[in-house]
Length: 259
Image 1 (cartoon, rainbow, N blue to C red):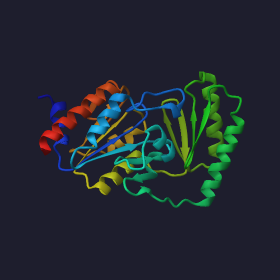
Image 2: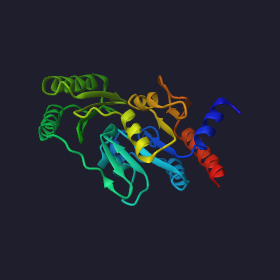
Image 3: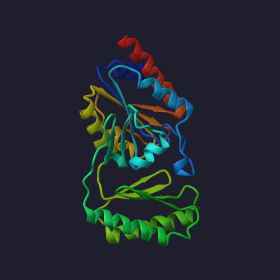
């Protein structure tokens, strides 16, 4: 048995397992139009299998706002899958729904003003798309050329530096985003772990913001990095299909352990 196999078996046989997964680039391919993202058939099948396992909780942890995450994940009101949106600033709880958030009206007004201002000033930038977010905004540049990308990011940085210098700034694959909430995927994992009383966590992600969660994992957990880049993960897989293979192994081992 390899070290990777032993680590997978250890987490698969824990008493109460939380399986928390990023969405874009982890379960769904990265796409030019962000709202067209959908899980691969293999990823969806793996999740449908995992949610049937005893003492196993499945969660999606994303930078997407909760509404957008529910749309792209095709997440129904009766779903048993937990959701953490906006990097852990929003939660959807099975059987309960959206947990109420209490945000300052001044923060929300500033969010609206900066969203409108960036949208107005970037209107002529080809390939740039501003994503309104619950606690800020994101600047997508996947289809923009390098010069336009630099200009769009400089504009966003200038606006936020002048109006909201305390906002959190994050970068990812072809996205720059800002938020007046400072939660990260590490705090999302900590919250979920406590809420579901997990004895171990499996977390998988593919991007820079996922490293917050990966670095937060403990000795009994399993962190998986999908694709390249520097990582604190225990295990690296090449792509979504390879991650599905690991999730299928976890399901098989867990089912045998709990039968």
